[in-house]
Length: 91
Image (tube, rainbow, N blue to C red; front, top):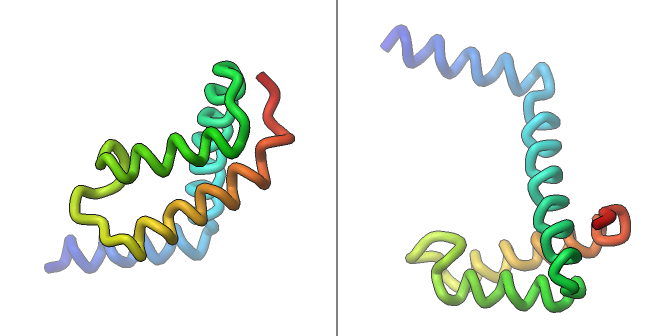
């Protein structure tokens, strides 16, 4: 129990230190890699979103038992990030 409490406290300390900013940066870097790969294949942002929608529908991305509401929220987040970052990423 002591190790668990220490672990929780460490996570809280990391959060206070701004670790979420680090994770946001990692996620944004991964999204930029997706954009770069899509652009190298000649895809548009809409085609990339359609590919992601297909991957989620086929279960290649996301969890197998992901409900439609959660999938829609996830895809909306993808759309927002792709549209926000698309023009900033070069091939």
